[in-house]
Image (cartoon, rainbow over all chains, first blue to last red; front, side, top):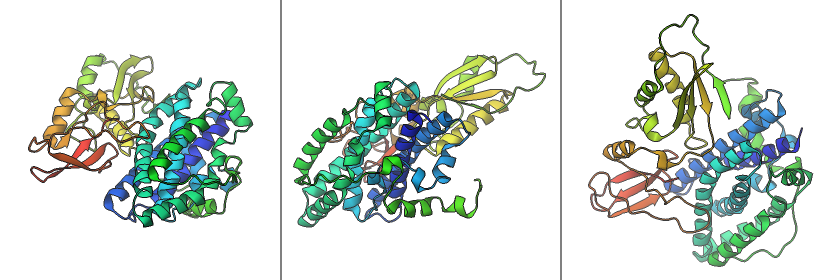
Length: 249
Length: 177
C-alpha cells in the first residue's frame, strides 16, 4: 500500500477514535448545551471519518468500505494519534484533549486544502469548515475555564500536564509524511508545528495556564502501537460486529 | 468524486426526455427531510442536473459531513424522479467546492424565517481560534433584535439555539458555514 493509504487511515482513525470518545458524553454532559455541543462535534468527526476511511478503502482497492475499516480491524491496525484515545476522565481532560487536537487538525487541514491530490483537497476543504468551529469552541472554553475559578483552573492545568506527553507525536514525521510532502500531497514537513505552537502560546496565556516543561513524547499510534485505552474503545465501538459478524442495518 | 449507480436504464424507454429545467422544477418540490419547509434546491445542495449517456446525473453536495439526512436526501431524489418516470438516475456526490450557507436561496431564507428558523447571516462563520462573531439576529416570531445565543449548537448540525428577550421564545438559528 502506498503512503496515501496509510495517511488516509491516520486521518480517518484519529477522527473516528476522537469521535467515539466524545460521543461517550452523549446523555452524560454537565449541561444540556454541552451535551448537544459534544454530540454534534462527535457527529462531525464521524462524518469526516467516512470521507477519510472511504478514500483509504478506495486506494486499497480490495473492496473494503469505511465501515469495514472502522469495525473489522484490531488495535494494531489502527493509526490514530495516541492523544485521541486518552479517556474522557472529566470535562477538563475532554476539553483540553479536544483543543490540542483541534488546533493540530485545523492547521493540518489548512495545508491539505492545497494538496496536489484533489480527493484529499476536497475532504480537507469540507472538514475544515467544521473543524473551524470545533476549534473556536474548544479554545474559548480552555480560556474561560483556565482563567475561571480556582477549581476549574487547577483541573485544566492538571489535564494539560497529563495530556502534554501525547502532543509530541503529532509532529513526529516519518517516511509516510516525507513521501507525501515531497509529492505535494501532504503538508510540507515541519510546517504545522510552528502554527500550532503560536496559537497554543496565545491561548494558554489568555487561559493563565502554564505550558508544561516536560519534553517527553509518547509515540506509537501512527504505526499501530497503542496505549491500553484503545482496546476498551474498540471493545465498545466494535461490539455489534464482533457479537454478530456481518450484521447489517 | 464518488459515483453511485442507483437504477439501470429501463428497457424500451421511448418517451421524450424531460428537459433539465423541468427536472430542476421537480427537484424544487422535494423537501429537506429535517426542515421540510425548504426544498433541496432552496438548500443549495443540488449542484447540477445533466443528461448523460448513462442517464440522468444529479450532482449533490453534502451539507455537514456527518449529517444523517444525507442518505434520506439521496433516496428522496431518486423516489421523486421515479414518480416522474425517470428511472435511470445516477447520483454524483461532489465534495468540492464545499457547501456553504451562502447557497441557500432567497426564497429558502424567507421560508425558514416563516417556519421559525432565523436564516444564516453570511460572513459570520467560525474561523478557528478567536471569538465567535455574534451576528444581530431578528427573532423570527416577533422581529425583535433583543436576542441572544444560548448555544452554538442545536437540534441538528446546521442550527444554533437562540432565545428572544422581547417575546421570551426560544428559536433556532441556521448557522453560517
